[in-house]
Image (cartoon, rainbow, N blue to C red; front, side, top):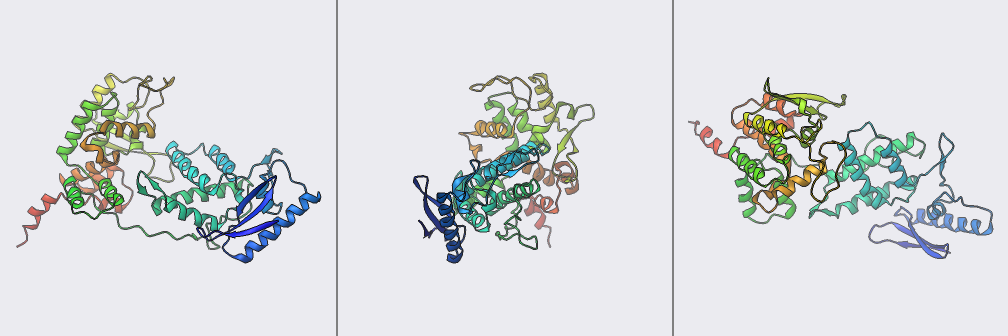
Length: 421
């Protein structure tokens, strides 16, 4: 009636049986034959009871998972009397609907994590039967995947599993499951061990990166990592902004680049900025933060307005299309549906216009707005500005981040070391 098959790829046992006119297969979520045999016995007994009429299956359950569980998985009644759908995909959807208090950028990240989790763990799998073996298999399969030619790192996988844990905790609080999260042991420690990350390298100049690449022997992932640590000197920043000014498809793009280059603001901070944050009378701009204080929904820091940035923003505000946000795209854009309201620029839109503006140029190696942020901090340190003041302007929260900007440009060190007698 039912048979077991050992999956050499995952090491888990699979159970096969016929139901509703077709062959069904599900993982037993175990590498131990003894446990798989118990699942086999449960499936055979459940099917026999269903066929004899001594057991009935509700219409609101997923049949195959219900049979494998021995008829124990049911939709749980909610407070309003309606049944709760305990399938993992539905639980994730319900979780997201209940997270209105979170920042949109945070929700965007969680949606991406859950998309991968639902794909590999299967949306139709009841949350109660997702166990530790399934999560280990998830980690293994994600490690083998690539994104834009780059392998998925342990750091990324851990973030996805952190989101999984948050969903599980929410599900338990809302009576979707009574079980403890399989990621955590009795001592509240992670059961999956991740590789310890290397110490983050100092940022490097364009010349240093090209020289290292020219030696050969680097993988595509290693080359991409090098370019992510790029910082530009004063002349390169000016050259980049000049290029953007000539090739930007819309007026809001150049101010977006200049904003980062002369304040060191993060992309999210640029998109959150409002026109009223610029005070040209006192020569300062207020940056709306989200990362510095975990006990606050938002904080601010103040950065002096660079003369070049002041000129750029005054010209931009004179032709600003409308709305309260500093960076706002027009309601009508080429090959896009016209918008009705002023909603600012989304992270995905900003990323798209960044890449589109720099495509087919030498600047395509720049990984994102964070390169201009690195350059802002590095150039200030080189110019003699104190590290405390740079940290204040950039909103650094850890000593590790401060230390990344403590290097000097390579050519600066020659004059300093020559002082040694």
